[in-house]
Image 1 (cartoon, rainbow, N blue to C red):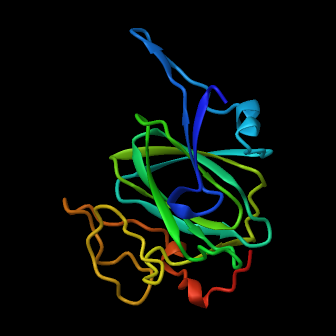
Image 2: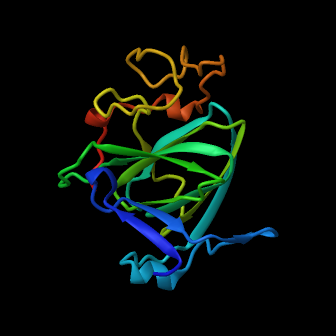
Length: 203
């Protein structure tokens, strides 16, 4: 496990891990292993990732909170440009931390990776002008299997950084903004998700 440091069960939520890779740098630049299956297995994180995804988003974009219902995915996420606030919500019905969340700031500079096991909803908020977000999945994306919960569910109570606004009983982004006036930007789909207590999801 020489190339990674792992913080297990972050915020008391079993299975959530924050991974920090070793950085080898000098005046020329740096080198790092962004993924090493042997190091992960030695750390007790034995996953078979089958798909890599990458997205770019502007400041104020919030994506989430998403999950796949019949084909849940473990995700290993990181940021290669900019900064995001990344969130995982425990949806495992027999978990002692059901409905609890953890948020982690991921940046191109800190190079931290966030491991989110199956049975969690996932989302992120872009804090920088532009952010490029990468993640590995241990199952494929199934377009007809996507589910979600409201990003601002008051029962979960995610403390999204910088967002100013009041909950109006739904997931609409209307009326929410950053202190500098940048509006919160959500997809039409993400503004229609319901509260967790009204969502039929069982992991």
